Image (cartoon, rainbow, N blue to C red):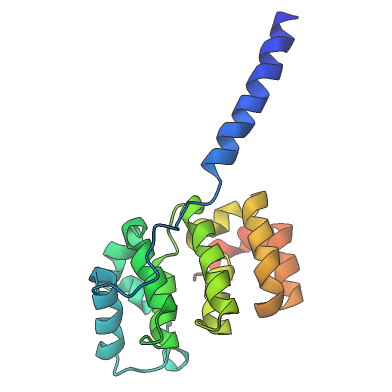
Length: 188
């Protein structure tokens, strides 16, 4: 009886801890007002200007920003730049190409922050502040998100947003888990 009691007590506690660990972060502290440009803004703007303001569709590799020294630094530890990234995505002063580059730099956010990032981009997409292509980059699992295709909270966000931006076959492929097995060789 004692063993059963401990199991019954431990399982709910573990579920609470798991729920808290994988719940989305609270990004409500991120200001909606434009603030002074920070390091992320400088990296994205310099990259865009350095490529002669070429649209991301005309580039050989739209995620080449991840290979620059500045991009590697931000992409390796993106959490401190989350609010600034959301300000870039919200601002009409930035092109959709700059928003694509910003989103790519956020691929390695911890899963809680990434889900909150997904929620905020969902709102920005609904408001017309980001286009369908930027939303595709957010929704399609890459970086941290690729390893959480099974997480109910991530799946809920994916199934909420994917039908409006991704093909039905790709959605089924991701939700089945096959995308995870094929992804390591597919690159970004």
